[in-house]
Image 1: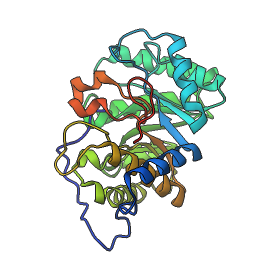
Image 2: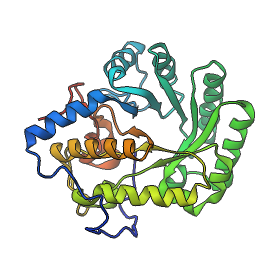
Image 3: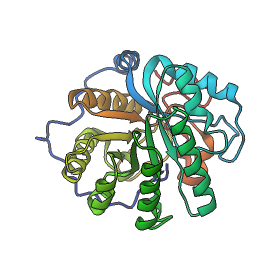
Length: 302
């Protein structure tokens, strides 16, 4: 997802924070082994990457491809998160449910209001057909400034009216919920993205920064449940200020945040499942390397 390289965080590195990287003394081989062990212990959830190399949004993707990728992820996760309900994305929650997984299903909202209506109606249909456990009405819409806050609230309100009994929320960066308490009021659950990398945080401070993000979200949440809908670290690509991609750093980050989520009893969706080359166009080279698996569906480890 496109993110906020220009966002200035008020996070201050502190050696006394208690969240500095606690795995720095391990050898690369030990990190790789711990990464595999952590993965096999299982995640709460993972963000589903739909597109193979050479594919992009707008392409029609076969159900066989989705079935294969869900099959790869199933042993390691309880939940699958999808981002859209059109252009083959509506098959993802159906197939996930057939594999016994729970689903967070997103309606992708943008500047095209006609497309937004299609996304919303498909989300409602999937809810009514029993394929949705949590409905996410929009993803980073306010960050991209695609629609107004009032338009967004109208969409959320409409979905809640149409699917009573379904948990409904909206996904955005943690600070948007501090800026817009109306979002917290209208949502059943706070769905938030934490990206120390995109805020230029050095890896050794990344876990402390993530914890700071979570504390800010808790302060804004008014006691509502918080679900981390995205966090991750790229294995390759350009630096963002002092944040450096790397396969070792990506494995360490995955281990660290899984331990943190367990310690703090936080439901977390990791971003992402597979590398997707099409993201180079919107995020630069680094955009193509957020997966735990590479573009050929091979698990990344040393």
